[in-house]
Amino acid sequence: MKIATVALCGALAALIAAPVAAKDWRGWNIHPEGYPNTIALEDFAKEVAEKTDGRIKPTVYNNAVLGDQPDAIEQVRNGGLDFANFNMGPMGQIVPETNVLSLPFIFKDVEHMHRVMDGPIGQEFSDALSSAGLVALSWFDSGSRSFYNTKHPIETPADMKGLKFRVMNNDLYVNMVDALGGNATPMAYSEVYQSLKTGVIDGAENNYPSFDSSNHYEVAKYYSVTNHLIIPECICISKATWDATPEADQEIVKTAAINAAKEQRALWAKRSEASKEEVEAAGVKVNQVKDPAAFQAAMKPVYANFLAENPELKPLVEAIQTTE
Ligand code: GTR
Image 1: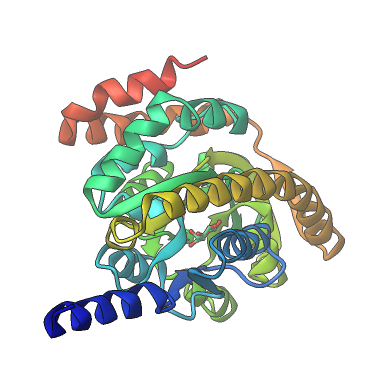
Image 2: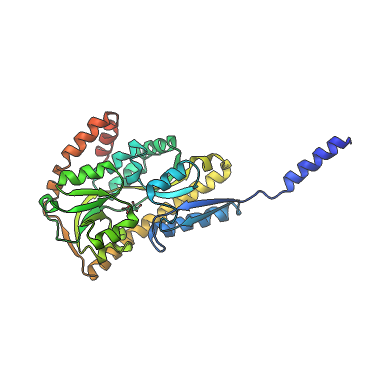
């Protein structure tokens, strides 16, 4: 054998024998330990590490320690972070199609949301996310959101008047609260507790598990059930990370994400009940609004403005509304 050939063979052998460097994936999570999403994300990470024999080692960073949601979305898009559990609320500012999911009362109930997101319409949202650098692998629940505040129960839209509510970072929510007669302030989730406590805001809106885990219930004693938003959440992988992953491992990651979503949905249902009981036991007054139709009727201008600004999204809105 010629010397050059020997050297080449040696190099090839070294390549084959060299262990493939494990890929450390960093994952963003807004929630604390023990929250349904956190448990499911950690099980996702475990399954991926096990099934890839450690070729991929995902780590989940809880409590938004890697930044608030809008920042984290950017980081996952540009490959600075590898994966995350994102609520589609703040996503609307970046991927306009996902704003459709933030239209108040667009879903009849959580089951309706499941039917939509688990079918072909869900795929349309995945495609839109993918064009923005995010691969949505599966959909988590986040129940339905209602208003809570430190002052008094909300029975009718008129009770919103004069109250300042924190909303997630999305202009649609500002329009929504305006249309109901209240004042809206977009604010990071992590700042809400202190702002409620010091009176910078009077209220916010969320599902029972987040109202509970964020301790907002300690300061906001009135939770008024409006169910105005039912917003799905994704396990999203950075497209840069995804494209750099061999196909066989992509399959493993996808399956793990679907398993995690099944687990999260089951945990979610239990946690919603438990959190409702917990906040009531802690003295929160929960009331059903007297006339839900009045809240829905107030959303007409929100829809009208949205469709005037985004006429191309009308078919998507109608497709959801007509899904049985
Ligand atoms: C929670 C949601 C979070 C975050 C938070 C918020 O219900 O799971 O991703 O969006 O609400 O209000 O900021």
